[in-house]
Length: 150
Image (cartoon, one colour):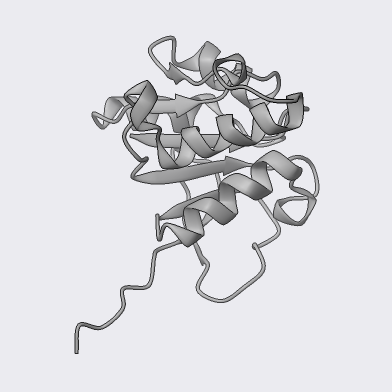
């Protein structure tokens, strides 16, 4: 299960080839219900698991927060297991220009120690990011750091 997050205004980096690579590799894609990157994912992958904000209660911002949380971390009440990785498609300007939803998704994935891939340039801030192209789309990957058992 691969979660996808990104800008409501779209991304300059192509979504379709990466999503198709996930599906061709036997993966399942999970995404939100917004416009922009979410809509591009749904168009490229009609079988995507779509988490709708209207499934949650509260004011609009709270519903969007809960929706993003369910996309990344899953939701037992909705029968959603945690994602195994997160793909992020930032707007023009790259990862520093992430909106609140994408920033939340990224933070949740990093806290859960999920592998994260961020499309495009510039390199995301922080140590450990290494270049990795997926389906010809340039990006950066951060693998979780495993803590030592001893």
